[in-house]
Image 1: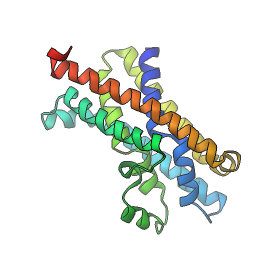
Image 2: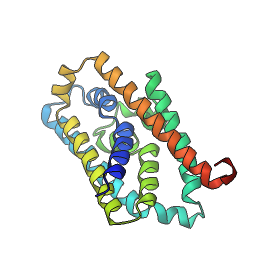
Image 3: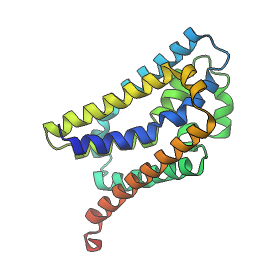
Length: 210
């Protein structure tokens, strides 16, 4: 397994999925539910994330090819999108990309089981996550990279599952200050990854810059 590839992809995914940022959202959406109902919502969200991530990983490149989009062009656009999400995290604001517009958030309050919408999509498996999965899938050139890809995705899903299943306990342990600090750290890390994506793409698309 390529450890450098694994660490880079895992850092990108965990920063985008951001368990500290999504923990209070999960608690808000499941407020007033019994522990059993909260577990059901958590399991539904993780199942949706897992299935969606596998589908994107297997078909993402084919979709780009179908529309005639190069991986480097997609990486440049994706890096810009991820940078916008990172800026929201650093500034302490909710990104409409992952959390929806105000109208969408009002509809979320009436969802019977918010596990698929809005938790799995678009909060956990939003444009930023999809972009990251497709970009790193395109960069996996050998078996070692593919193993690292699967390991990074699997570990991210496991950590997110542990966070959601232990959400009531974690919510009592972590205050708003700790959550805000963690979100901003994730945002800085994500911004650096986004810039690296854009710079690598520009070097290929505009070789004169290199």
